[in-house]
Structure formats: structure tokens, C-alpha cells
Length: 439
Image (cartoon, rainbow, N blue to C red; front, side, top):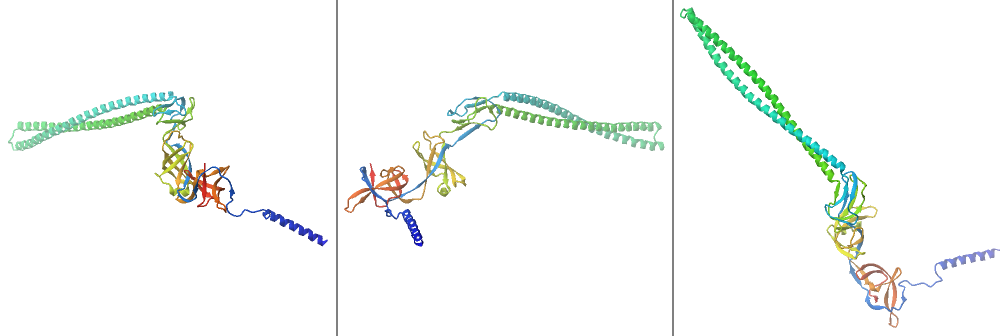
């Protein structure tokens, strides 16, 4: 019983070992390390070339999209119903062409009202100016009255001085005559005449003093009137300034109404091509709503992404080759803008190149631009030497047998970038080998 079990376990172990060896390929023939070469007769050989190292300047092909360097979005400045749209997408427009018309009835009414308001403000200004003229005339009369009153006061004061001098003289004479009468050197009649003369002089003096008071009172009245006239002039001037400000404000309202009316006619700000339209007659337009888009078809740019590792190799003003393969476009374009921030997801910078214009070049097309990389050595072969079989590529390599006879062997290779008629070979070929150039 134990012997049977031992035989069973031994057989199972040998079977398991054979299975492992089979999975490892022990029972199959192996291909030695190196190239797998299969002899193949090549009936289409045109020539041959020797594989050597070549110095190349590799490039990074950055992808980009062509867009207009000058795109103009046209929006409405006022609210209203669109009456007409006079161009369609794809039409060329000239500066000043009427593109859209908005109903202007409300804006014309507003303009008429503002013009009437301006007329009223101007009438008020004329009235204020007339009131100022009247106030200035009253002030001038008050000035004249003041001068006359001042002259009257001066004359009254002069009369008072003269009357005072006569009164003093009469007073002195009366006192002398009284002394003479006591000494019986003067008659009573002469003394009486002195008294009458003195009384007359005193009366005249009192009248002169009263005249000065009256003249001064009149002057004070005139000065008060002059003060009132000056206040009236100042008030009239303020009224003129207010009226002037009202006129200016009314003019500004008229100007705003005229501008608002002009906004109902939307014109092309520059020459270009109408590429987008978001409005039709009957639609409602409002301030800020984009209605149309115009671009300059002959001023185009290529916008692309550059890896942040290549940022030191680009600079403003530097020129790069741009290719648009769909139309065979190949031109040098100047780098005009570098967005100074990287995309944290793709680790790239956005750049813009100004393109020389060519026919059939339109916004939205796909293009590439080439960024030169450091010079290095590589194996390059003629494009005609490469034969493609499905997704694989091969060349024919010359070999010699033991008798020295030459023959061609197909060699599978991996290719890289193209440089004109030459293609870089990344693997599969060695230096000094000779490859066929096919017909």
C-alpha cells in the first residue's frame, strides 16, 4: 500500500515538473540574441547607401490652432427690438457699413423731449441775464446816489463851518458891545442890533448843523440802498450761473439722447469678414448682448501649447517654422505672445505666433510649429529605403555568406522623425551597414 502511494506521488511530481519545463519553452528551439534576419530576394533595388552617424537638429512639434489675431465682438449699447440685419455670415464688411438697426421710436421721442428741455433752460438763462442787467443798473444808480449824498454831506459840513464862524464872531461882538454899554460907551440901539445879529447867526448855525444831520441821514439811506443793490446783483449772478449750469446739463442730456439714437444703428468698426451672427430681425437686443463677430482674415495667429521644459528655448520676437499640412503651408512665424502662467494639468505654456497670410488659410485650421532642440547624432536613411507592411517598417540590409556572395536580408526597424527625404532610425540598424534604396 505504501509503495503504491509512493509511485503515485512520484508520478504526480514528474508530471508537474514536465508542465513547468514545457511552459518555459525547454522543449522548443530558441532564437539566439541579436537581429532576426530572414533571407529575402529584393527585385526592386535602385541603389544602396552606407549607414553612418549624422548630426541633426531635432525639433519638438508643438500643436496649435489658427485663429484671427483681431476678432471684434459687436454688442448692443441700448435696449430695443431689432428691425434689420443687413449682412450674413461670410460676407465682407467695410468700416462704417450698417450691420444692424434697432427700433428708434423711443429714442427719437427722448431726443425731442431733451431738446425742449434745452430750449426751456436757455429761456431761463436769458431771463436770468436780464435780471442781472436790471440789478446792475440799479446798483449803478445807487452808486451815483451815494456820490451825490457824499457831496451833499460835504457841502452841509462846509455851510456848518461857515455858520459856526459867523456865530462865534457875532457872539464875540455881542460880548464886546455889552462891555461897552456898561461903560456907557455904546448906545442901547447899537447893543440891540448886536443882539439881533447874534440871534440870526445862532439860528443860521443851528440850521447848518441840522442840514449836516439830514445830509448824513440821506447818505446812510443811500448806502443801505447800495448794499441792497449789490446783494441783488450777487443774487442775479448766482441765478445766471445756475441757469448756465442748467443749460449745460440740458445740452448733456441732448447729447446723450443723440448718442443713444446713434446706437440704434450698429455699424462695422473696421474692415473684415462677418463670421458669427446671434441676432435676427424681431429679436430683443440689450446692452452687453453680443450680436455679431467680425475678424480680420489676413491677420492670423497660431495658438499652441509648449511644454514647460522647453520654456527656455522660446522668446518673444523669435521666429519658428509653422506647418499646416492640409494646404501645404510652411512659413516662418514670429512669436508675439507668451502667456505668463502654466497649465497645472498639462504642464504647458500657451504661446501665440503671428502668421504670414496665404490664401486658403482660415481660422480653426490645425497647424504645428517646430521648436529646435539641442544638436545630436542619429542614424538617418533615405525615405525610399523603408518599406511598410501594415504598421511595421523594414529595410533591406546587404549581407555576405561564407563564400562571399552578397544577398539582401529584411530587417525590421523602428523609425523616428523625418528630416526632408531622410528618416531617423531609432533601432534595428547599425553603423557601417548597407541598406537598399528601393525603386
